[in-house]
Length: 195
Length: 195
DNA sequence: GTCTATAGAAAGATAGAC
DNA sequence: GTCTATCTTTCTATAGAC
Image (cartoon, rainbow over all chains, first blue to last red; front, top):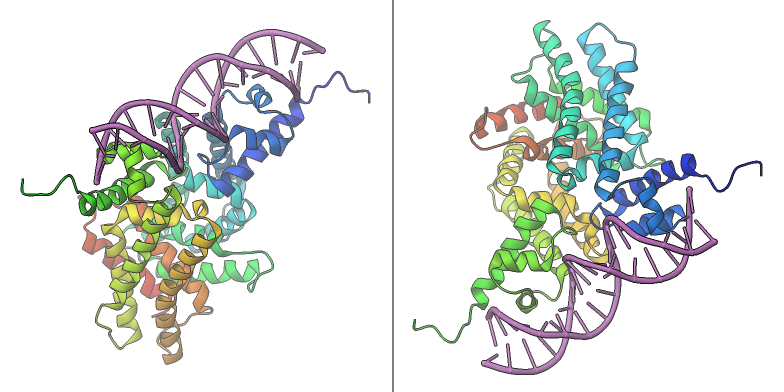
């Protein structure tokens, strides 16, 4: 009531990102139209261009925001010392964080090929930085004699693929609790590196 | 020269499938136009409709053909007896078969959401049948006391996700040979199930 | 900040000549 | 079997009223 003219910039902007994230995850970037996004937000198509210069930038910002937040969330956690503890932390963190954000995760994995070359390079760099977090744990554990890994880079990619795979089938309220899923995966990870 | 009028039905048909597979894998189903496919084949857009009723059927047939061939290829192999040998066979077969067909695999994983509900159900059924092949190996090994698996269904999905992940990074002529990759992955799989 | 209206391009699919 | 031509729809993005 005391609010000025119709200024919703701080509200509508995030709503646009939210709507785009939902629709891109459900139907794919190329299949979603600006009109669908506008309808989801409750504005007209033209109004979207107040919040993004174009559709490509909308996609890129979703992916960059997600990858930045992922890295930051991992690095903000208290660091353990023993490689085995760090590996357990990473495994459970990865599953939990990804299960909490299925849409953002899905987009980050599926829509890479719809980025321009420049934008792709920037996202790939962020992804690599995250993979390096796990790889350094494996390398430290290998050096300490805790793990038996023939190739740390390959093991890194194998473990991340396995953990991320949870998102393709896990449903809240399903047969297995989240904690149980995390524990089973952690045990598979642990055994797979010979710990 | 001795050939009749301009009848290329047997040649052009497969070429259309091939071109669609290449372009769908590279740019995504929704982003590829019928005109692009036609250009790749070397015909006009209208001519494509001699070989497919519509774009959706083109996608569905690619996925169905791939899944059928995958199942058949696995079942055509000689069956070993011991669960551990069967698991090794499956692991190496899965990696090798998938690395040989990166485009078909990519489409089968990425374009599920672009199928109509009916078509999706049919592909999901084929995928499930393939997963069941691995799950029965794990169940047999568990029953025989060879493996230690808390949940065979979960282990099935985790292993398939890990193995399929190879396709996202492996490049022919890269740092690791195919045989070495297969062996390393097999060892991780073996250890992850406690064998 | 949001709307209506529209420019301009391109899509999927079809018709009919050859 | 392939072509050209085209129907009809829909798209991204912009312009200008309010």
